[in-house]
Image 1: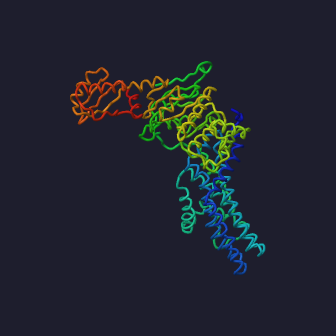
Image 2: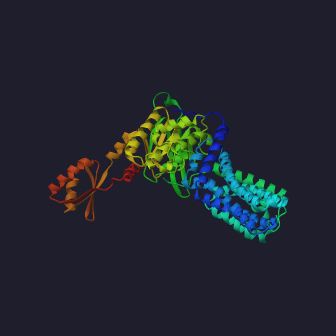
Image 3: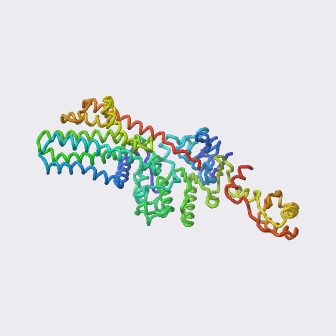
Length: 260
Length: 317
């Protein structure tokens, strides 16, 4: 046999594995039709910005409330992250190819980190680009307020992408209904229930993202309920806990019951 | 029951590569593997059994993806469960067909090499692909492969790092006869180089060709183990049950009972159930008996030729 495995620690193998798994995940995700739908969805804020620009005067506050908050934060970000987050391991689980990753001498956290990295990167590219382009068209020309509003929602997309993706990726390792649960989380928990129960803010990724956004730009209609410090702290806790849980899950992975 | 597959020479004194001691695995009330013990050294061993016998469960335990509910499972001297480092020395070919359809065969095998931490992943991937005879299709997407080609690329991915132990679950599924022969030759060659290879199959003829040693698993239990030819002889010499319909079953039964090759006759409704240990001899006996008794034979059917009945016989022995 011509191949020779490297000797030494599993860290060396993990270093070569990380970019391979990231590349694999990119190709898995980008080959799906739903990614094309997400691209079309992400094009909505820039499209709305063009419409705003064509038919009215620049109003940073109104655009922020109606496009950044209602479209980017409420639709594009949750949908992109739930699809990329659950899709990172979803296909591997459904098709059984996860075995090809797990039957390798690499640390389980490396597999989780590589999958999460790819899913977060895809979500970031889509959501941040969407906000940046929309902001550049409509509000940045209005001056510093417009720049701050755009920066605020870019920050929200970064924090939101990280937290949502980690949350949904981890969820997908525990249940096959992660996609439905993820959408339910953003619609019911963060949407309907959060307006009734203010305490939910501590368990809402949307509020973490808005809390960070609020440090750049004073939000109006959807006032952030968490301070930026609290939002960042809770975000960090969520990310660490999700990574730990996902790693634990892979370490304890067992093939489902078969009597063949 | 214990199987010992120990090769000649130095390997004979080495620790077995695979060792199960009273290993069992159950899911709730369902027992998939029950009190199985065996040890294997270098060589090819066939794990034979009907569907649902527990072969896949056993292989998954060996591959570290299932913990034994009782007993111990060791591969190369250690428990493979929750120990990723063991995969440096294990190659696994799972039964499920799915492989990353968007990758080319070469990319898939190279991916496996990279995940094994191999520096020479490119050349190792090319060499592994050549070993399974997929050079011509190496740069095509796996999604375009036939079932047999997918099996071969899975094998190429599993042996790219030259593992000491190779576990294959129904590796010949979907392969045409030529591909099967080629794969069998490859496994024999690897075994000759000191590797331990365990493959499962529910088809006797697959095991017959390469598995000099076999383990027969039936309903989760190790029904037989050892040299294939000895077990094959047991299977051949086992009692065969034959159902006969004739114009006068009772008279035919009396005649047949006089023949030493027949050791049981049962009168059933509109049929006779006859047991014999010598199937070929019985074909001659039944024709003679029919003439002697003056009885017209309307149907002579072997009743138990399924593989399951062969396994069932081995369990009851």
